[in-house]
Image 1 (cartoon, rainbow, N blue to C red):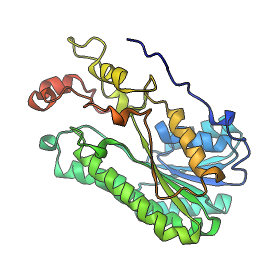
Image 2 (image 1 turned 30 degrees about the vertical axis):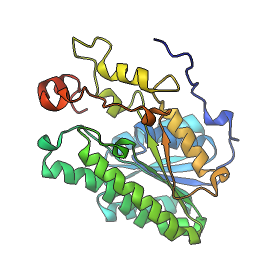
Image 3 (image 1 turned 90 degrees about the horizontal axis):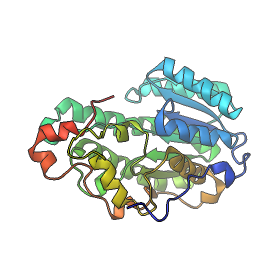
Length: 298
C-alpha cells in the first residue's frame, strides 16, 4: 500500500538565512563522504568554512574541492586517523593555521554487520576505537578552541542501541558510549559556553550502511528490508542525507542555543515501529539466508 503522506525533503536554505554561520569554522571527521559530507555542505551553505578529516587524502582533497565549488566557501582537507591523537592534533593545528578558529565540530563513525558469534575481538575493538575513542580523541583535540569560540559539538550516533538489534552488538556498544560522552561533555563544558548534542539517524537511503542491505532474496523480490521500512516509516519514506544535514544546521544555529546534552533521533518516527531489518529469528539460525540479504562490505 502506498503511503498517504510522504514527507518532503527540504533544503535548510529554505528555512534558515544563508549567512547565519558567516565567519564560523567547522571541523568534521568523516567529512569526505556520506552523511557527514552533506552535513558539512549544509553548514557551509550558511556561511561557514570547513576542515574535513579522514584517512584517505585523495578522497578528502576531491571532496574539499567539490564542497568549496558547491558553496562558494573554503573547505580544506586534513589527513588524520581518529584513533591517533597526535594526528588529530595536527589536523586541528592545520585548521587553526588556516582559519584562526574552530566553532563547530562533527564527530562521525562507521559500521558493519556481524553477529557476535562471527565478530572477532579485533573487529569489536576496531569499532570501539573508531567510534568511541575517535570521538574522545576529537573532543580532546578541539575543546580548548571551542572554549574560546563558545562553540558546539554534534556527534553522529544511531538508534540501534535503544533496543537490541541483531548483528549490531559492536556498534550498539560504541554508540551508547558516544551518547554518554556527549552528555557528560555538555555538563562539564556548558559553564565554558560549549554545547554538545547527538544526532541519531534512522534508516538513510543511499548511504553505505543502507546499501549493504540488498534485495537478492528470490523469495522477497521487493527486498525484505524495503518491505519492513515501507510499513514502519510514519512519514512515508526512509531518510535522506539532507534530513540529517538540516538537523545539524538547526543544532549549530542560535535557534538551539539552549539545547545541550540531548539526543535527537532523525528517523521519521521509525523507532516507534522498528522491526529487525533482517527476518528474525531466521537471520540468526540460517546464516546463509542472512548473507544473501547483505551486500559484501563496500
